[in-house]
Amino acid sequence: MTDIHDCEGGHQQDPVRLISTPGQRRMVVLILRGAMDGLDAVQPYGDPALRTLRSTLSVGPQGGAHDLDGFYALHPKLGALLPLWQAGELAFAHAVSTPYRDKRSHFDGQDILEAGTTSRDRPDLTVKSGWLNRLAATIPGAMEVVPFACSTMTPIIARSESPFLTWTPATDLGLSHDDVTLMQHVYAPDGQLSAALDQAIAADLLIPPVKSGREDASAIATHLGKSGGIAVASIGGWDTHGSQAETLAGKLPEVADFVLTIKAGMAPEAWASTVICVVTEFGRTARQNGTGGTDHGTGSVAMFAGGAVAGGKVYGQWPGLGNLYADRDLLPTSDVRAWLGAVVHAHMGVSRSAVEGVVFPGVTLAGCPV
Image 1 (tube, rainbow, N blue to C red):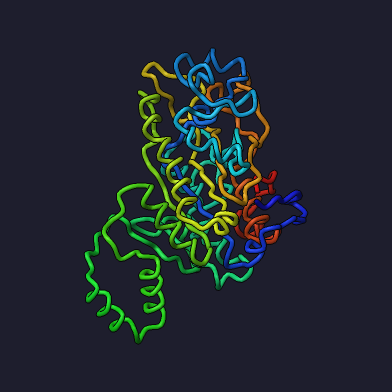
Image 2 (cartoon, rainbow, N blue to C red):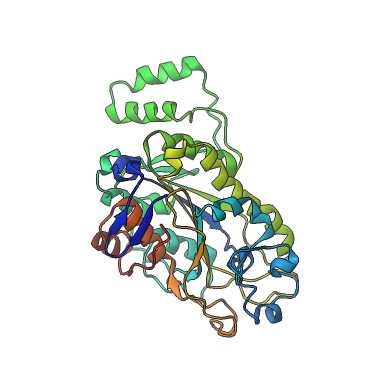
């Protein structure tokens, strides 16, 4: 595990030499679309106000959640990740959000999260790029970095000038060995097309469609395990206005499975240089509603997993549930971009000035989950 003691100053102790090679750093971003309830995923059961706000949700260790540190507990359905927590390979940043406030639109919230901008009310339409693409252009030795997106189209987070290899998991190409050979022959005169095809063949992407986050994760592990780089994927279905307990019981294991599939699909030295960042567009209301769910909110939680994570800790400043934003939401105490920026700076080797000026314009780096 890489233990980076001073993210802001850039000083680091790096016993895993693989990480110092630009093309061997690995960063995966998983977007949970629909606004995942951070108060349920990582439950602040030590806050006395939680029980007055929620009668059947986020009930802490007495309801089967896994105690982390005497204040926070991990949702029962994320229990498969406990070995990572115990090994120091899992961390969280609580009470985080983008600068987006008050409108609580999934579409705008996701656009702002992916663009990485300081927009408060609506997406800045003058920004044509996503922060992960801007990152690819700033990583030292970026020619060795192959950005990879599991998506039916290039997501906003990956758009701009740096090329992204986009895998469309919902498309069954149905290619035979002869089909692939013919494609190689047809693409041969075009260097870029030929190289992209070779990458797809090497990563076993010309196969029947992917139908789950586990298969997305398996493809990412195969691709990044060979050469390093950055990747992005998403899992939808987090809009829990009603029956949240039942919905999250099915959805949260998908997150754990995604992380553990990547770990299982990589050699130990590749996992040691990997950080998986799990984020959502905004959180949900602190108060449980009348249908056993929660509505669109503000603050949520970010998760960081991987062999390069300084884990076993919940980062961030807890605001207290007696001090709600707009008398309804978890009050954000830090910008999720600041935590992502700390990972970009410390793990991917991008200068602080480039992180704060290019990747996440206007942000100031936060603490250090890696």
